[in-house]
Image 1 (cartoon, one colour):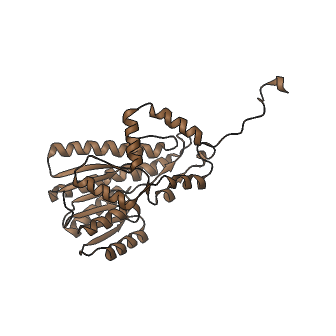
Image 2 (cartoon, rainbow, N blue to C red):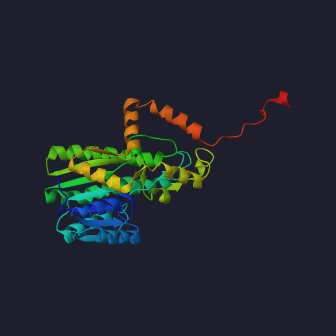
Image 3 (cartoon, one colour):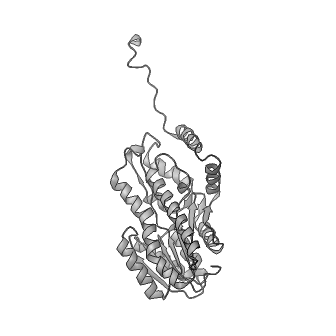
Length: 296
């Protein structure tokens, strides 16, 4: 797909961040849009921005949607095809974050993040794939993360969801290549992108004193890692679609970590442990060992 003019793109997580940036970038190229998010106010703001930022007339429809609801996703896909006549692209972009130890994480939190980050991608892919094939010229764009290439302590749920998206999308791409059906797929691995994901993330209390000093400080430190803005991320993603890339890396940090895991596929974990120890809160050293009676 070399041009987006006249095409129809469906985007989840379109109320802010990369989803909004993708919507604006595509609209500027004359692409019609079907936008979805749980945040209705954010969706309205995205539409208003599109109306003021684009010269070419494009049709924009919106849907308040929970991507973890399979039936809602299927209904939205059918509605998009009916309202726009066709669908050429699906950007499964919606995502959330979770910080917790494996031992301490609640099952409900794991179900929450897997439901959005992984099942949302699966539901979006399967719901839209028949319509993409019917268009004769389609593309599936699934958002994983640099943490779909690289694992770190305290992010097991997030890592699991993003590694799953990577495996799912790479298998999908191979199947589509074999089918030669006019549809392709790309897996996106952003590094630190300036979006609202930090504010919507969940940080479990078990992280305090283990890997972080406080929740407030952790959020502030996390946002310092966001070195790429959403508009640049959207530009890179669309270039990846044009070039039919299998894997799209976004940001210098993504390239560095991808190289690290390629060069040290197992040993990188020891480096992460070393770095985490240096950054973790320092525990006070006792004046004496309470089990050492000679010091009493």
